[in-house]
Length: 342
Image 1: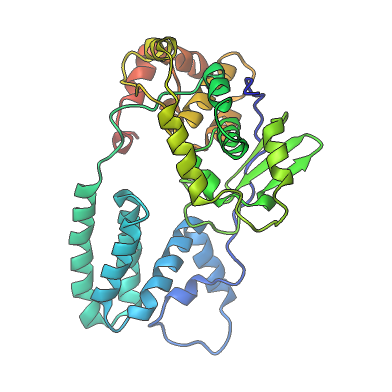
Image 2 (image 1 turned 30 degrees about the horizontal axis):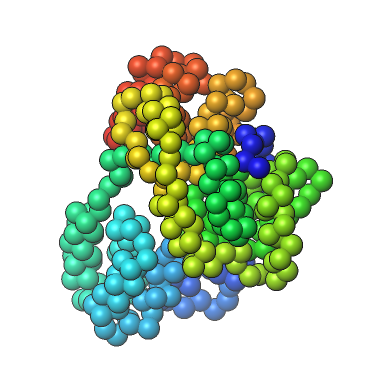
């Protein structure tokens, strides 16, 4: 059943770079060394986040076969990435390419390529539609129960995992059977790949504990024995999306959520993001009642900044209670674009 969850976050695992990878591998035109360079390696690995080095490594791997024809290589990389991710993410890829070019190309080629990439980056930013103007309609526990009653078992497991871990449905794509562990305290879900960690380094950004895991999820896990196999296929996500389009919210649900957040427009239908928004609303209520520390709220929502987490609060008054400020001040913060916040 989709009862209101008990919230508990078990902390983030330490971030670590894959042992077989050295940032020095990305410097193709450095002079050779007669032996290993452990101190340089250590300082390079510490200079930037594992996610940044992971992104550079991925772009370098894609670019290497095209080093003799860099423009073709860049075009091929951009084409494949634009088919799978948003322009805002491809902007980061171009940033990695701008870093990579002078380190792998001859100076006579690197300069023109850098100027080209700067203009490509401007084009990508113009393509970026930005954040949606309307927020996803959150799932209440009552509405979620109605949805679960109409879908097959596998879709139930997907919906409940997204709801009980306050996750984007896209974050479930990287989950394997070994990422879900049944412990004496409940079901521990380790997310290796999330929106904030698209490189998927050998680390877990978030571990969320479900103290009372739903029976539908446990039954589904019994059918998955291969530890490295993905829990869900691409067809499953399409089925979930289709089921959401067919499930109509009640007028009561629409009116209730709109009344809590009058400053923003809310969709009149459920989307893939409705699970995270519904779970986030319950988490904010728990924080306002003192049942969930602010630090655990941030971890549960998978955000590092309070301003970003505010976007998931269903009501400015509720956020003000948690943050110890006025509702008007919270509303002002939540409506300020992220790029202009200090």
